[in-house]
Structures are given as C-alpha cells and as structure tokens.
Image 1 (tube, rainbow, N blue to C red):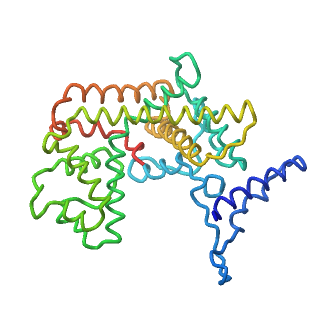
Image 2: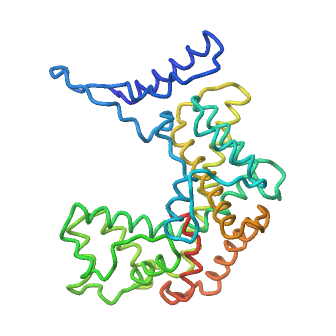
Image 3: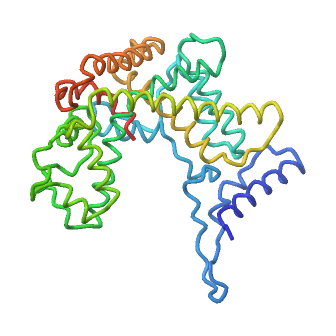
Length: 350
C-alpha cells in the first residue's frame, strides 16, 4: 500500500543483515541501492518506474548539504569565490569533520549521532548547566533572528513558482521585480513592497491577481501585506518580535525531540522510525551555522574566531529585539529605515 515505506524498510533490513552476518570494511554495495529499485502501480500494465526517493535522507546520494547549498547560493551574489573544496578552519574543523561524515553514513542512526556531535562541537561558549540547554540556547538564538526574512522568502519563492504556471501574473502591474537575491537591501525591497497599502481595494490591488492564481498565494500575500503595512491596525512592530520568539521556541522544541531520540539510540540501542523529520531539522541547523562560519571566514580569514563570530550574531539578535521594543506600537512600515538590519542575515532565509 505504501511502496516508499516498503523500500525504506527493505533498505534498513538489508543493511542490518549485511552487517550482522560479517563485519564490513566497505558498504559501497549500498551506494546505488535506490538507483536499482523500481516499482509499478498497475497490476495490468507491466510498466516500471524508478523509485525516485529524493527527499528521504535514507537515500545517501540524495541527501542535501545545507552547508554547501548555502555557500554556493550566497557566493553567487557576494565577493568571494566558493568552491566545493572547503578551507580548513582550525576553530571549527571538528564540527565540519563530523558533519561531512554524517552526510555519507549509510546508517541513518549513525548519521543523526554524527550530526549531533557536529552541533555540540560547534558550541562557542556554555552558559547553561546541561548540554541540551546549551545547545538549545546557542542554536535557537542564532537562527531565530532569520524568522522575518523566511516569511518574505517563502512568499517570494511561491510567487515566482506560481508565475511559471500562471502567465496572467503581471509583475509590471504588481510593481515588483520577479527575482530573489540574497542581500539585505534586496529583501528590504520586498519588505517595502509588502508595506504598500495604497492599492488595497482598488483595481490594481495585488489581491485580485493572486486570488485568480492561487488561494494559498493570495492568503500569504494578504497576511504579509497586513503585517508590514499595519492596515486596519491589525499588526504592529511588536508582532515581529512574536515571530522571532515563536521561531526560537520552535527550534528549542525540535532540539528537545532530537535529543530524546539521540539518547534512545545511545543508551538503549533503539532504532528510530520518524528519523526523516528529525534528520532534516538537525542537518539544517548544523549546515546553516557552519555556513555562517565560512561566510565570516571568507570576509577576513586572518581574524576568524568562533567565539567572536557567534557573539556578534547573538548581539544582532538582541539588537533586533531591542529595536522592535523601542518601536513596538508603530506600524512595521514606519521602521523602513531598519529593514536592512532586520533582514541582515540572508543566509538564514532558505
């Protein structure tokens, strides 16, 4: 009934049987496992299709690398030459080592453990009493500041994708350029456009265009337009702080779940079933934080210090919240002067 789940279970049972029978120095047999799996959906037609398991991290060849994807995309728009071969940075070399091992591990349990080791070895300083509290504090505070930018990038990607299928989306009429460039001033441009409430309930209202194209796109635009423009006094600047704080709590919750499963693997040898969601979250956290280190290193290789780099990032988090607090009762469009600061960390927006 669920061919994807069947093949996933087949892979797990096969690799365990393979290792149980005899110790192995190589598991290269499993490199092309998913390339050789086919299925068919009709009993009457003998037409077989590739299994095409792309998003499940159990397929090693298809596992994404958030680190490399982030550096590649950001390097296309900034002044450094990114190549697949990363420079060796002593301060973070242990973390990069465990991260790269995790991406190639045949066992999903081993991969999850290696990602957690990578994350723990990246922690720049410890304020809390326990390991999990330090991890939660460090990761959630570092990555939650990008919550506002992720709202904009999510809408932008949906708009551009929708326009490929619906040719009635007229960017000239909308007054926006159909491009996503990961620089703070470019995201400020989108934020200013989303702050415009002069076209609401007019023939040129973007609502009309989006309604005919996609209900989801229309709903997303309406929410963001209300959020940034303050139309009808529904939203204020303080609502941006709620988004950041909600993101911080969400990351802490995900890390708590991941840590629970990690401990079950380590202390009781338990195999996990819901690894896809856990693995994808953990890989994103580690990949993003490592990419930030490399971006700062590329800026000035001679002055890179892990502690200082993350102190600056934590300072940006506190600065944004203080800025929001000082203007909390204003419409978001009234703090357009601060959009570049609010949307500074574009590496977090995808």
